[in-house]
Length: 249
Image 1: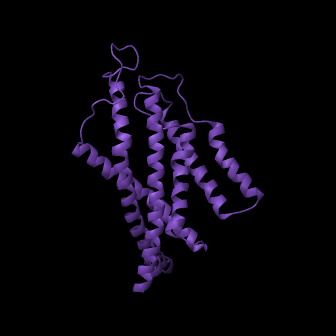
Image 2: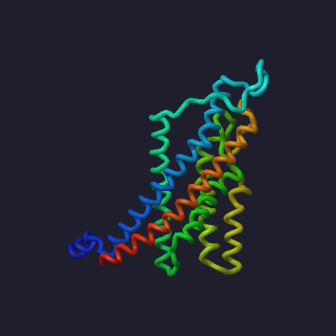
Image 3: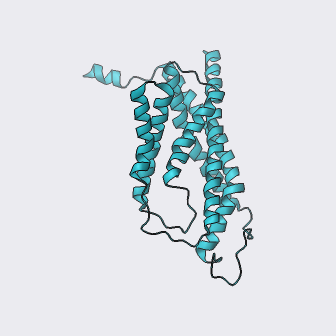
């Protein structure tokens, strides 16, 4: 029994520790850069639309029925150090979390003989965007405040299921071949949308549809840009950190 306990408490080997450090360092740098870029793009392109929509939600503006037509370009608040600073911080933390996942998957792929580079990282980032943004957004589009929506718990379960199914489908498509694989890929991609995302009983909301569509379009655009940067940076730092560790060994 003591022998088993000793084996169980043995420290990780130097090679394993270096691999963990490589994943951590690569993810921190890649996630911080992508998160900062995402936050800046959101402040410029997404947040103004979001704040505009909140004016309709609060009743400060009316889509129809008001005495005067609402302006497409209302006066919005200036940069708020606390609110916008926290947005930048949380964006960096979110993308560091995404980077941990994508770099860990890169490490697994490399161990199985697949080359990782910054250029190929672009494809990894695009796959992440498709899995986490585009595929769920096909049936559950980004929404502005004040719109009707389905049950939040069911929506979250559907979103997570769609992300996992889409990510698994793209992994199979990238690293496997054959008719059974392609059949599984198509099934995984279509199943969440055939089942369908939870929808509200009726559609209602004070926000103009033009504003809602602009918000969805910009959310997709910013998401794609951030994920492509994340994938490229993850591949770049993964290679550079590997070279640094090899030089120090």
